[in-house]
Image (cartoon, rainbow, N blue to C red; front, side):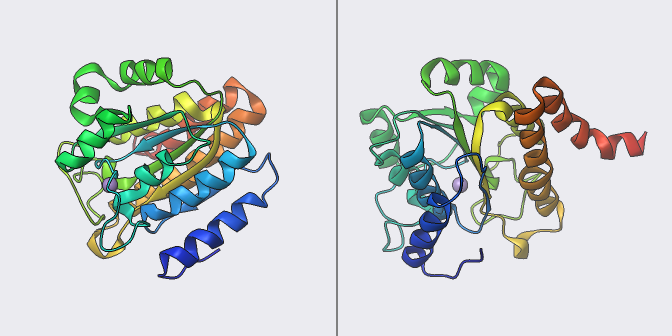
Length: 237
Ligand SMILES: [Mn+2]
C-alpha cells in the first residue's frame, strides 16, 4: 500500500491492513516516517505477544511534536502507551530532550546508547536486552538514522557516532528466527547519494528473505542472511 501525507488517516489505514494479515505473514513496512511503526505494532500486538526492538538515534519519546501526537518524534512513546506492549528496548540512542530521558527513567523504558554498543559490542548489548525482554517473538523497527551518517546520510535528522551496518546486520541475525514484523523508515532520498538507499534495500529486502528462510529452514536460513550480504564482497574478491 502507498500512503499519503495525513498521519491520522495513514495510521488507521496501516492498522486496518496489518490486522487483516494472516498470522503467519511477516509485514515489512518501508517508510516514510517513523510514524508508520505504532499502528503496525498495535495491530500485531492485538494478535499475539511480541517484544519491540527499535533501532534509532533518537528516543522518540515526546508526547507530541509539530502539533501532532502521531509525529516521528513520538513513535516510541505511542508504542509504550499500548497496553499489549510490555517488552521494549531501543538501541543506538544518542539524542533526546531532557524530558524524554526523564520519561524513559520514570517509565522504565529500556534503551542502550550507541556509546554502549561501541564500548561493549553489539552482541553483549543484545545479551543484556534479551535478559530483560520477556518475549518469544519480536517486531524490529529500524530508523535508518540509527546508523552513523557516514553510512546512511540520507535521513532527516542525522546524528554522528552511530551504529555500523555490521551492528545492524548482527541484530537481524540474532533475531531472524523470532521476527514477526519489520520496518525500515526515515530514508530521505533528497539527502542521499545512493548509499542510504542501498542499505535500505538490504535491510528491508534481502534481510527479509533471510528472515523468511530462517523461519522455514532453521539455522541454514539464518546463515543465508550473511550469505546474501556477503555477495558484493565476494564479487570484489
Ligand atoms: Mn530517529
